[in-house]
Amino acid sequence: MRTFKKEIIIALIIFFISIFLLFYVNTFDVNQSKGVGPAFWPRIIISFMLVLSLINLGSLFKKRDKIMEETEAYKEEKDIEEIKNNSKKFFISLIILSIYSMFLRTLGFILLTPLLLVSMFWNLGYRKKILAPVIAIVIVVLLAYIFPNYLNLLLPRGQSIFRKVSYIFY
Image (cartoon, rainbow, N blue to C red; front, side, top):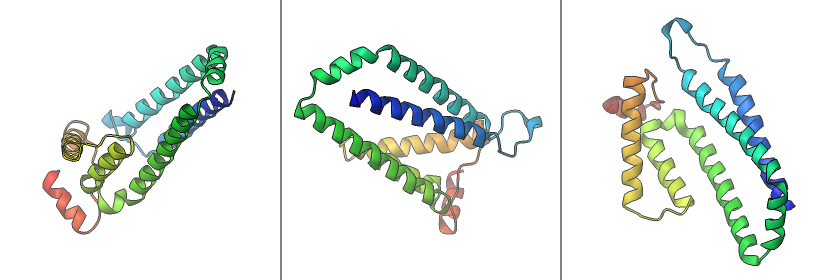
């Protein structure tokens, strides 16, 4: 029963966060005559997040009895330890994302995003020391190219010397 309640709580939290973010995105000052603007992609992503959270809630209620039976059947220490470990990873991910969002305007996308990606890889169990930074840098280069050139969206440049460095890339 506890696992079912936790899953419902998490699904409801995601649902309400997506509703809040959808209202927040609608407050963006967007010139509608230009077509696709800075609120377009966040609106699409948040809408998908809202729909998927509703689908998740529906499937949880549909499979309620099965989830409760499985919870009772698998109350071994190993499973409880795995749940604790996953909860720990979740909260560490939230802390990493909070730190990222606090320093993004100051340090900029180019410097901070590879650090975010590598730390998230590490937190989620990806331990290849050479490949993780390479993947992170490739993702950042692709995003730094796609967003300004194809979507006309500038990524945060940072301040002071970080701003000057970002002019090299975009």
